[in-house]
Image (cartoon, rainbow, N blue to C red):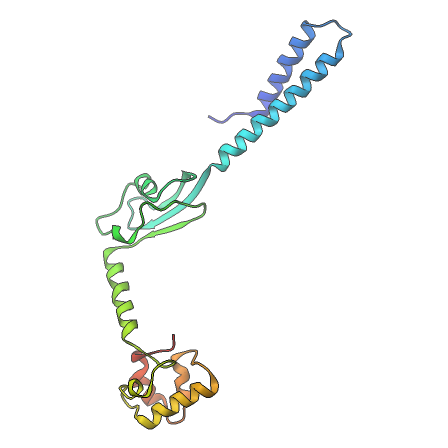
Length: 194
């Protein structure tokens, strides 16, 4: 139910003025003025309470493996499990372990509920990333394990990064003398610059 605060204010003023008029002599205006001031103070208090109530609500967007994706109005301080309940629960494909259901929600937050498949893919990508050789930190022994990179080219890679700084992208390795597209294409999936 939405309260019309202006109508409430006018009603309070009317009642206060009527009561003040009926309880006083015609010439007793100071009581009416005091009553009007009190009514204005009361209206301000009602409006500030309404602002506090509305600021108590937050809006959070949830999508992914959830029954009803969308924006939900939640009470400030709500937890993720409460939002999941409000959204109809998780789907059968949801990776519940990928969520902190006890986490406190914040206004404007976006939550993507991952699937089990998404979590497995991410784990594989992380494992694959760990297997790649970092061309900015690898020593000669590690660099020579790459196809087409012998000891001389490994030394050139190290000399290049010592003189010019770290490689920003894997493609930058082609700036090293003797490393052309043919060698780069053999090693591009085996190296990282990050």
